[in-house]
Amino acid sequence: MALSVREYRARIKSTESMKKITRAMELIAASRIIKAQQRAQSAAPYARELTRAVSAVATFSNVDHALTVEPEDPKKAAILIVTSDRGLAGAYSSNVLKEAERLVEKLKEEGKEVDIYVSGRKGEAYFKFRQRPVVQSWTGFSDQPTYDVASDIGSTLISAFLNETGGEPEEGTAPGVDEVHVVYTRFRSMLAQEPVALRMLPLEVVEGEEKPTEAELLPLYEFEPSPSEVLDSLLPRYVQSRIFFALLQAAASELAARQKAMKSATDNADELIKKYKRIANQARQAGITQEISEIVGGVNALADAQAGSE
Image (cartoon, rainbow, N blue to C red; front, top):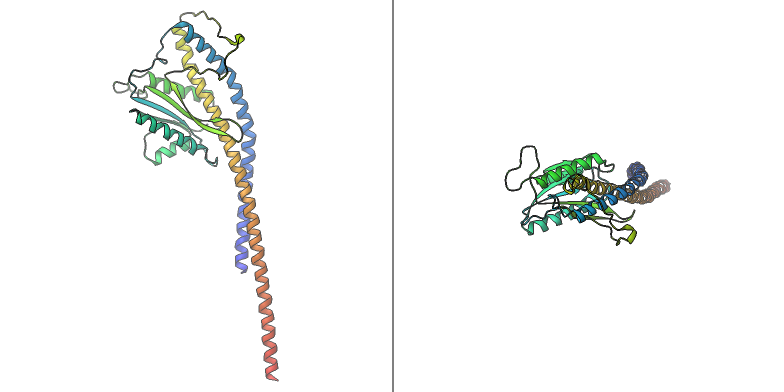
């Protein structure tokens, strides 16, 4: 029985060590999520004003741009899936991948081929394990994305969309697609994060949910040198800003999910420690009782032997 007590004490010690790790990760995630929320909020005004500018150009120019033209018979689509680089974030990455799988099935039912682009090591490992091809992946920045990364992703997806789909892609370019979708996790609050799927290209200018007031009506622009050249400059930036905003939302969601998961792990470790201590105490008491019983039994046996010899 003493061996069992030692075993439980070892389990208590290892669980306490695990609790320290999960508690530290919870505090780190809590400290980083504030900065992630601030970054997402600070990027919103730029995205909003850029959306207004693009809306004005698209409304008053009457120019058909390559990024806004709907293909007559789309046959191929690309999906950018934003996951995390590290685990211990609960169901964060798995929820995004489930949403992406639903989108893949929907596109295939529409008769479209699907090219996969992945952000984050979890998504990369998911498709590698299932031996499914990934056109390109980006890793190492999921909790702290930068605009340079978003620009690189946006340029890759734009080049894939603008590439001719009728034949083999040119050397060094991404295979051509007719649509581009992005699947990421939208940050609602510390307790609520939801995976969403959005079509990125052909471009649909996203307006705010609220209707603009008279003071917020689109201004009249004069285009210099021409509306088409303005769109050539604005639309790629618009796509990149939307991708950057999605990465920032995903980063805040990842940290919130990790904080929640680590808090649950810490609470579970507390419960395990209490359970092991209770069982260890019961085992120790049972051992003491057994030892006392053996001593009393030995004393009684010795007394009976002495009485018999007399």
